[in-house]
Amino acid sequence: MKLVVVKNDQEMSQTAARFIMEQVKRHPHSVLGLATGGTVVGTYAQLIDLCKLEKQSFQHVRTVNLDEYVGLSSENLNSYHYFMRDHLFDHIDIPVENYHLPNGLAKIPANECERYEQLIESLGGIDLQLLGIGRNGHIGFNEPGTSFLSRTHVVRLTESTRQANARYFPSLEEVPTEAITMGIATIMNSKKILLLVSGKHKANILQQLFYGPLDERIPASILKTHPHVTIIADEEAVSLLDRNDLEVNMT
Ligand code: PGA
Image 1 (cartoon, rainbow, N blue to C red):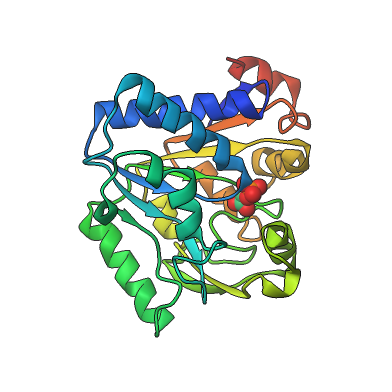
Image 2 (cartoon, rainbow, N blue to C red):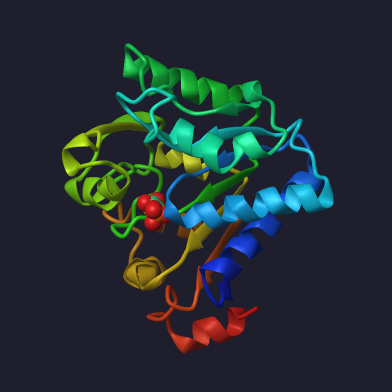
């Protein structure tokens, strides 16, 4: 894992947007794996600005998102479909048929998982997967205990994840209890992975990721075995890492 330490959330977003931009410039037909959540909001804003400034087209880019809540339509303000249109897709020139998320309203969610896996395969796999990390180490909605061999599946959300996401909903009761998420093996199949970590509340999990064991109780720990992972983390997030580890990697 390559660690890039930046000052704060804003610098993390700028660095991440540049990273994604370089991927698209080099490979205009890239398949990007995208994420939702507070961490990536700034990255998408910066990416939109970069697209305008540098007149970069996303005409040929295809995207697949990590996850979607079960039971929410793409028009629901809290769906990840809506989040992605609001924060990115509606502001760049990616054609609507080029971006994909799991269908949260699928009649048979298990079939939807199968369809999503096949879709990713038909696109030729993911070239660059963007990831955030949960305080409990989840990636996508793969909660602690998820098999490292998992493919796209339906998950029951843990209470800690529902509470963390409740800030976006009118009340905790309205946070869905299930989601469809790419599995850990699906994520690990990506050719490159970009993990973003910012804030003091992520310092603990970043410390565990660096110094803890490879363990299904910490889903993100599998990333240590991937050959092309770049972590962009801010000073607060790296505050519990060994200074020696930081100095080597400081940008
Ligand atoms: P956050 O979520 O960006 O809202 O902190 C990240 C995650 O849970 O994967």
